[in-house]
Length: 277
Image (cartoon, rainbow, N blue to C red; front, side, top):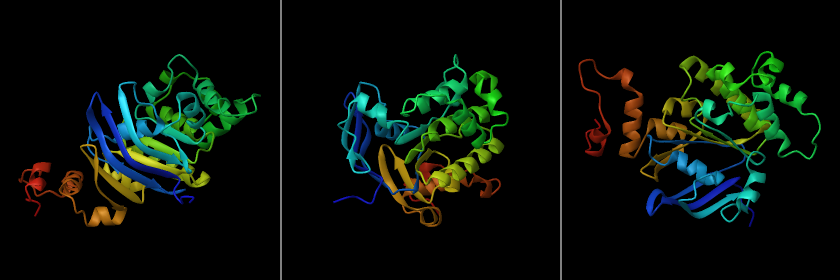
């Protein structure tokens, strides 16, 4: 039976030398759907993303089923996954300065992402400049000839977005893509992502510790704590009626502006002990 889901993950477990970092999570994403995976640092979010891409180090053990468009990925070798990464699944990493090669012009890096999955090995510069312009970079010819250190953080992140979307993947994984940016640039990047995802009807798994950021772009949220999904549901349901103590704590931490003056800010322990009133 053909699944209606683009991505279907069942009982995913990831361990490092016997210590579990991801504990049997299930995940479904429909074509065009945007799912937010939220949780504090160390909860297993990035490990989950890297497991889906099969980019974890050799000391990681991955168990469970990972299907993309009904094709099982868990048994694919690295060569087979290389043909899927960038073409079927794109990924935007957290820190653009480390994700880009500092010794190579950014235009060449975007072109490599294109030519790796293109049957036509001809001139790609026009397509690269078109994509750089599409993601809001002025003077794309100059940008293409620039090195990463010659660009601002926001410009580097736009280059990564261009690189991730140039092959029109059906799924885009965003791992904390705005964390290194200031609030103004962050908002512009999120609006750009929103527009570009809609343009190609790509599904998205958006990973962040920031509820406000995830809520801006995703309609469905999953809350991760200590390697497990503790709560999931539509954005409005999670934000307005959280059920799990950890979710309540995340919301309270994100809403510290409304705290009573002179009163101590609540911490997660307050919610685990039931003091959430």
